Image (tube, rainbow, N blue to C red; front, side):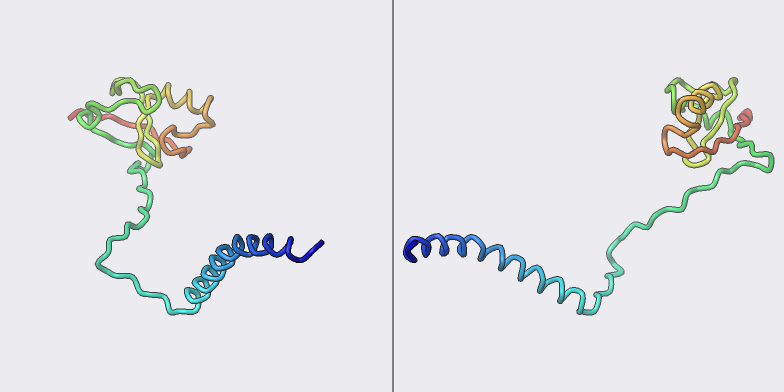
Length: 132
């Protein structure tokens, strides 16, 4: 092999590798300066939402949730999407407060491992409906 035949190939290889090497070098330098420098304090004027604590169910001592009939107006069963009928037994998810007819909750217990279709929680409380 003669040296003139390999010299152009070596130049094109170096030309291809040079941007990659520069990119890696800049990345390493940025990473090291970011770790070594003091952390900037957050600007208090910038809104940053915080995670919400899950609301606890408002169940009474007997584990039954009390709701007014007017609060159920226009709501639908979270599983079947049929309008809630206050005359039928109702249950409410303890995680997200989704409401179900008792029949829908029994289907969820059988087919979905007893998990709420909205949030995946497994706790349900019976609902007592008051007039008003």
